[in-house]
Length: 301
Image: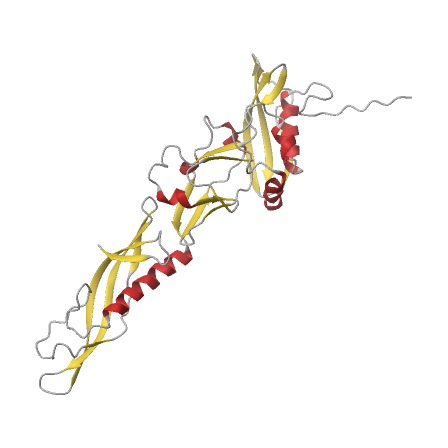
């Protein structure tokens, strides 16, 4: 007796795959970490496969396993003239992706219109955006270039430790975007906690330089003590209290943070009639911090 085993494949072996078979096969290939098999379910091959490897895919599914694949229109009711829309729901970790994937006939076979998400960091919104120059995907710098990833967990970061990056989940709906997923519309650059600490430390350093002066009105410094009863040149400025100063705005296009608030300087000086006079000087400051530098560079607004 001869037993025939029919194998469904995206590479053309076995029986002809339906549109639903293609979508299910694609997701099953992703779920087992087989990048080449997943790509075989589409004729539209990506321009770069840097992040479309088994190693990267296995990192993705280790974070967000692909489970519970459900085709909601298995009879391919929504197809005509060589095109089909397959309604599928699948879990990526604890994220549920509910999408209609486009499938088309190519050389007589059903194929996904796209098997990878296009991240176009040079698209609309990317012009003169300095934060994008620091962009990393899976730890690799990509800058303003076009890259491709499989749907699921994507490690998005920045080569600048002063920055943090967050993005919307890149799931199946991103496969269907016309012209690819314009990444700049889905990512947000902000100051990281380390960046905020670095800005405040840089401010403290700049203010400390101002305490080295013995003048009542140190040049290029915020504190000014107008007091005719003390001898100018005998002033000792103490460590300023900058706890009221806050970061009020961050510009990702210029990599610039703005900060403002009151600073209180303890001060003592020799009185003209003898003895020592003590007091405080309160100054309002408004500064910018260039966070493209490490440490950030403080400048007066």
